Image (tube, rainbow, N blue to C red; front, side, top):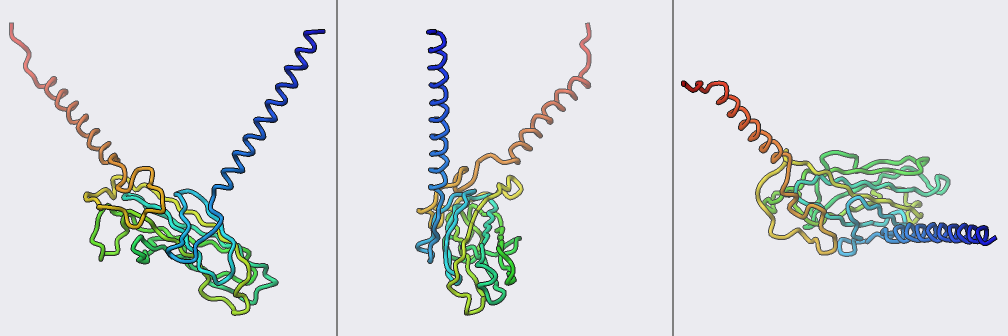
Length: 244
């Protein structure tokens, strides 16, 4: 009887432990969800900071200017993506054009190397997706050159052409900024004294000036090893045998 009771106690304890684990994991998931930004700024000064790879959402009104900011370091090629959930088709009065713009820390608009930063949504469309991939961020450049430099980058999403009757309707925007490491193909010298207006954003994983290691190092080391092996092999094949 004692063995049965102990088994029952162990079973109950296991069930309670499993329930506690599920509750704690659920709470952790809820906390992670709560940590994600759910608002957007309305100006450059109030732009909401987001990390690379982090999704941010915001509820707004049709016609609002929505601002976020994210970090980008040298050697990275940033991409900003925004998906806007539009009002019900029955409440809209026509098509609308949405636009995504990216600015650097000096608030200079950056040209999109690829992507679709502006798109016209028909009255029946439920969502519209905008993307903008910038040029590779350089470690240093003359500021008048308008080249992308390490620091904060601002994302602005707004509607640029819509029927007046549709202004003020509720919309929901989801934004995500990612960055691709371009490696040694775009590696160059120089270093910026300080990132541009990056106090509100977290430093990228590889730092503002990028990682010191690139695929150029791998090619250099590999070439040196092959050259050494070739020298040793050549010497072995061409050396004269010793005379006795």
